[in-house]
Structure formats: structure tokens, C-alpha cells
Image (tube, rainbow, N blue to C red; front, top):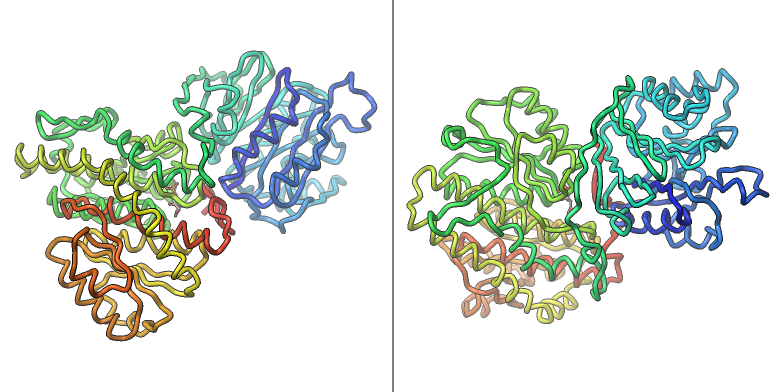
Length: 614
Ligand code: F6R
């Protein structure tokens, strides 16, 4: 969703801002803009803060920004519309009436109507339909020569969520940022400082960062930064070092980020497993669970809270917890759980799963559980993200930055984390040492299995070309592969805009089979365990009604090959690990269908990478 970047230092601010916004493109946006404080010596200009905003892609903004634009401090923003239409006026930054205060804002100001009325009575004229504009006017109204003090006074009157960056023309080189419910990171450079909603926007300049907490305000100048709370108590900063390399946020020869991220999975899964497998004892080692063995042993049930693809990973995780660790487990949609007045029982372990660690639904559900005394472990990718920091412990999945909106490598790393946690729990209950070692050997083989499965690329592309113009698809699976069927359907609809449903194969006769016709292909995920024959029966039912069938099944499955119209043979492995080999073909299938249809694979319409509003 919306992104923020701010820069103050010796370099040309406009260039750094536009480049930073480009890095934030993946989050999803509909317009973008920058505000730069021109240098005094540049002279000439009527307004010391120059504002450039454009509806549409960053490329439009880039065209509008003069190459020689002067100024060494500025703020920029990518907007994902909530209040008001998508147009240049509603795009951020917003200025106050005098043109001296510029602000960018992520989040939602809930009481903006009453503040707007108050300011209008004092003669302030609003020009946009946004809730954010009120911040610019309020800061200007409260300004008495000290920007940081004015921002704090304004924040005292705001209700809602925000990550903001603010400049005042009379304080060249200073940017004030603040956070409440919407991430903001300070980047500490050499003689320069940055602010951003996401470290990817500053990675080209510095890896030394401070993640702000809710209720904190930062004031940056090229040489210095100071963090304090709203009552002006100074806060000691905790400086973190970002481990991501710049290359990780480049396409590195791939045509788009999604393709790159799909093909990175052998390495990203390896990273999720690395250093955590204890082959000697057939168990796992975790650094950050923050639970003693006794506490883990006392766990009687597991609940997972998540959204979208992360929820699908949770569904696989719950299958593992129940079948392998013998713990009852349920994966819940965070947006549902939160408003259901949930019962939080003792001896229950909660997991909040989130690639970004910023998803509002998951975050608020986690807080609700914690408020009721529940312990929540995070399974997150983004280090320093809100869920990672507010959870009671957890596991980082180390996928590296995931830039494409459609999640792929984070999903398989989340799966890897669930396999590890399941093993830890199973070994505390009734899994033997010998079985634990075998389980780990299987897990260790996963990156290579995934590498082999990726070799099916050309075959899958041909099949995708054949079916890409269908209007509806069914993805069907059973048992541990049912969530993978749901994930396949989600991937396809997200990036190709083709309607698809993920269904339990055993359920189709209870309704969805009515959809079957020669125009509705079904993608079957055929397991190699006791559910194989039952899945084949469902395939035959579809074939008997004229429905085309694409079957993803273990290599050498002659029976499946003889029934299906198209067969995708995945490498053989233990049935418990088939989610890894089955998800690769559905990711590739969605990707190639989107390519065939000429879609914007990395930034599909209407979607945002990090959904920070409810
Ligand atoms: C699907 C996708 C979304 C996210 C969901 C949760 O490809 O990316 O469904 O999985 O918005 O996001 P995180 O994992 O960041 O909480």
C-alpha cells in the first residue's frame, strides 16, 4: 500500500526520492509525488517547497521532475487511494495554504472531518478529498518556529493510524517523521539521513536503520537524528543492520520479480532451514521462540492467524500439527477471528503468519489474542516488522525481500518453518528419534526437489498457453494438498484475472461439479498416498462430464497420465512433503497464464503487497 520516502543530505533529493519510490512500487499504488525544499541559493522560485504529483506510474512522475531540480531535502509518496479519487490533487505530498508545510501520510486519520471543520472555521481552504491534507494545515496552524514541536502538537489531536514525514520551508534540511500503526524506518547514512516506510527504499544508501515504534517521533538532519515520544522524552535508538543485499531487490536478468522469486525457491527454502536442523537428535534448534521446553510440552492445541497466501501456509501447517505432532490445530482468517469475540484457551499456542509482518488484519487479530492473555509466535519474513516485533517470539523465514505482489517464495519458506516447528513439537510427544532423523532427511532434500520441479518450466508454459483463455478454473486437491489447490487458485486469479476456485476434490460432487463443461478446466493435485485413488475417481467424474483435466502427479504415474488431458509429472517424494513439489507447478501455471494474457505480473490491478488497512 502507500509508501513513504524522505531524504536530507548533500545529494540531489529529487533523484533519490524518485529512485526510492521506484523501489516501493511493488507495494501497490495509484499515484505518486515528491516535495523538495529548494536551496536558498537556487533563488528564483516563488515557493521554496516545490511539489510534483502524478496520477499513475512512477514513470509519469519521473517525466515531470526536471533533471536539474535543485534541493537537498525532500519527501515522496506512493498513494493507494482510500479517501478520495485517484488523481493528481489527491496524490501526496500535501501542502498547507502557505505552501511552507509539506506532508506525506500512510494510514487513516479517523477524526479528520472534525479537524477539517475546525480549520475551515479559521479560514483554511482544503483542496483535496483526502483525510491526510488535514495534517499539513494542522501542523501549519500549530507552528511557532519549531517543526518537531508543531508535529507533536498536531499528533496529539489526531485519531487513527499514521506513518508521516513532514517538512517546513523555514527549516531547510530537517524532516520530522512519526509512527502510529504504520511503519517508518530511519536510515543512517554518512552525512545523510533517510526516512522510509520500508527498508527497500533506502538499501542503495545505507544498511544502518532504526525501526520506529508506535508513538515515536524522529527529527532528521543530514548530520543527526533524534527520537522522542509525544511528551518529548528522548528515546535511545536501537540501530539495526539490514542483512538484505541490494541485488536481492533487483530483477537480476529475470523478466519480472515474480519469475525471479519463483526460481529463487531452492535457495530461499534452504535459508529457512539453515542452522535449524539438528540431525544428531532428529529435532530442530530455534533461537527466537522464547518458550521453554516445559512451556512447549504443555501446549495442547495450535491456532494459526493469517491472511491470503500466509493463511494457506497456515492450513498446511495445521495439517502437519495434527497428523504429525498430534495436536489439534486450526488456521483462521485473521479478519474473521478478530471480530468473532474469540475464546482464548490456556495451553494454546498461536502463530501469526505474515510475509510483510504489517498486514493490519493479522496484526490486530494478534493484539486481540495477546490482550486476552494468549501467546502469539510470529512467522514473518520482514525483519523488524510490526508483527515480528510485537509477537511473543517467533521464527523468521529468511526468504529475502519479496517484491512481486503475488507471494511465492515466502509461501514455501513459511511451509519450511511449519515443518520445523511441527518436528519440534512432534519430537516432544510421540515421534521417535529415528523418525525425527528421517523427517529431517526428507526436509533437507526439499530444495533439490524444488530445483528439479522448476525444470518443468517449459512443459508448464505449453500447458498454460493452451488453457490461458479459459474463463473459469477449478483447482482440486485433498488432505495436505487441499490448501495448495486454494493457493493455486489464488495465484491464478491475482495475476491473470481469470476466475478460479480452490476446492477439496471430495466436495465437487456436492455442488461445483455443476460448473463442469468443456470450457472449464480442472487442475488436479494428485497425492501419492491413501488419497490418490479417491482423487483419481474425482478426475474420472470430471472427464465423464466433458471437463478438461490437467493433473499434477508424481512422475511415472501411468494411470493419471492416461486419464488426464495434460500431465505434469513432479519428482517423487514422501507424501507429507508434496506441498513443496505441488505448489511450484501451480505458481508457474499462474505466471505463464498471466504472461500469455499480457498482464502486469508484478503489480496486478487493485492489489497491494502489504495490506496495512483493514
Ligand atoms: C497472495 C498474497 C496475499 C498475502 C496476504 C497476506 O499472493 O500475497 O494474499 O498473502 O495479503 O500478506 P502477509 O503475508 O504479508 O501478511
